[in-house]
Each structure stands twice: as structure tokens, then as C-alpha cells.
Image (cartoon, rainbow, N blue to C red):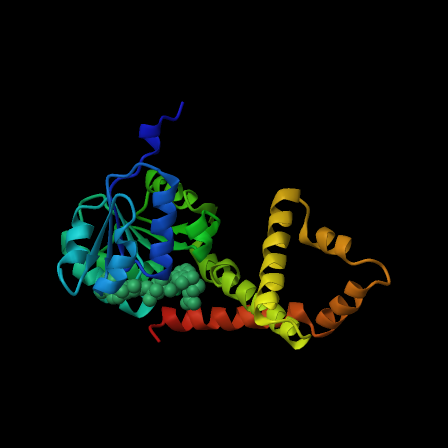
Length: 282
Ligand SMILES: NC(=O)C1=CN([C@@H]2O[C@H](COP(=O)(O)OP(=O)(O)OC[C@H]3O[C@@H](n4cnc5c(N)ncnc54)[C@H](O)[C@@H]3O)[C@@H](O)[C@H]2O)C=CC1
Ligand SMILES: O=C(O)[C@@H]1CCC=N1
């Protein structure tokens, strides 16, 4: 039987706890999963203050404590690297001398390969690459996870456990992390863009911005909750809204006529191309 003890995590350091790192941190805290302590680092006091109220979190501002990254990494069993992709190599060089034997380093960065991590941290470093998304804040993330050669099955299980506190986890080969990122990593932005566009259509039909926002947001929230609760596929739920010869049919025909699927293929291809640029250091 699995005990609470078995499921607990070692000390966790989130280096660069911004939008994404901060979202995981918040979800992890809310989940109540025991850890050996959580430390978050950010450049500024203002960013650090935003996380300082979270139970059990030590939130460090590097402008006040320049050794914050090495201090946190040196006492952690899991180190989440949440800085921007271009900053990753410098951060890894900074923390490498401080890492404890057996420490597991987990990337959140788009584009940056496990090989890049290993080239700085050394052969045999325990590295995993993750691609979460911001619904982690509310425990509804999707996280893609790929393990480097130095990470063993226990490391993978431990990091999976961490990400499961904030949602679903999909283990994939590393070459699928960037494609996955274009769907679920960036995906919340596509959804929010659709909400914005629907609200703007409502304003165009004479509703106040407040009414438009309520209609657009609650429609997305309600539809998502229905998708979640019903267990039905999206296509079936769409069919149930689309009365034959009714009004929705006309609207859907316009959207499909604009080749929405081709547009999403093109948009996600563009995101993938950018991930490849980031991998090349651009
Ligand atoms: N925002 C998102 O939805 C997702 C982001 N990611 C990845 O997460 C990483 C961070 O992205 P965001 O959270 O959006 O950016 P962000 O700008 O919100 O967060 C980065 C944080 O790093 C901090 N920082 C800068 N230099 C630092 C240093 N030397 N040491 C420690 N902290 C430092 C900044 O204070 C900032 O809060 C990127 O690599 C991105 O590819 C991955 C999946 C989704
Ligand atoms: O836009 C980005 O680069 C990051 C990766 C996926 C979501 N946000």
C-alpha cells in the first residue's frame, strides 16, 4: 500500500518562478503533497512578494540575495528550471557546482533540449524535460514529460508525482515535447484568444463590454465543464448544439469554411518552428 510518506517529495527549488514556475508552485502548495520544503527564486522583490504568502514557500529575490539560486539548488532534490529559454545555459552553469549528488533537474523551457542541459551539467546528470501549461494554478494542467538518459525510473516517478499534483501527465519521447508544446503548452492562449474574439463579436451586436465578457467567458467555462463532466467527445457535444437547419449550423459552416483546422495546423507549425529556433539558441 502506498503511504503518504512514500508519496512525499524532497525539497523543491523553482528557479525562475514566473508565470509557469509560479503556476506549478501554487498548484503544488494547494495539493497539500508533503515536500522537504519549497524555495522559489525571482529577480525582483516585487515578483518574490507575489509568492511569499504561499504556505511553506520561501520566496527569494535575487536582487537582495544574489546567491539565491545556488542556495536553493544546493539544498533541493528537485530543481525546476523556469527561466526564459535563452537564460537556461547561464543559470545551469551557475548552479552546477552547488548541486547535490542525485539531484534531479527539470526543465520547463520551450525548445531547450536535454542535450543542452547535459552539455552544461555533465554526462549522467539527472535531467527531465517538461512542458506544462498555466492551468496548473487550478490543478488542471497538461504536462508532457521526457526523461534524459541519466534519469532513472525513480526520478521519472518522482517528477511525474510532482506534476500530477497540478493535473494530467503525458510521458513522451523528447522529440515530441516541442510538438506537444504547440498544442497544450500554448493551448490556453488559443482558448483565451477565442474568448476575446467571441466577446468582441458580442460587443459588435450591441452588448456592453461587461455583458459580452460574461456571455463569452461563461460559455467557455460552461462548455469546458460539460466536456469534462459528460465524458463525451467534443464533436458529439457540438452536434447536440447544432440543430439541423438551425442557427448554429450556419455559424459553424462559416467557421469551417474559413478552414479552422488548416489555420490551427498553420498556427501550431509556426509555434514549432519557433521552438526549433529556441533550440538553436535564437
Ligand atoms: N508561460 C507558459 O504558459 C509556459 C512557459 N513555459 C516555459 O517557462 C519558462 C518561463 O516562462 P514564463 O513563466 O512565461 O516567463 P516569466 O517571465 O513569467 O518567468 C520567468 C521568471 O524568471 C525570473 N528570472 C529571470 N532571471 C532569473 C534568474 N537568473 N534566476 C532566477 N529567476 C530568474 C524572472 O523574475 C521571472 O519571474 C520559459 O522557459 C517558457 O518556455 C513552459 C510552458 C508554458
Ligand atoms: O510561449 C512560450 O514560449 C511558452 C511555451 C509554451 C507556452 N508558453
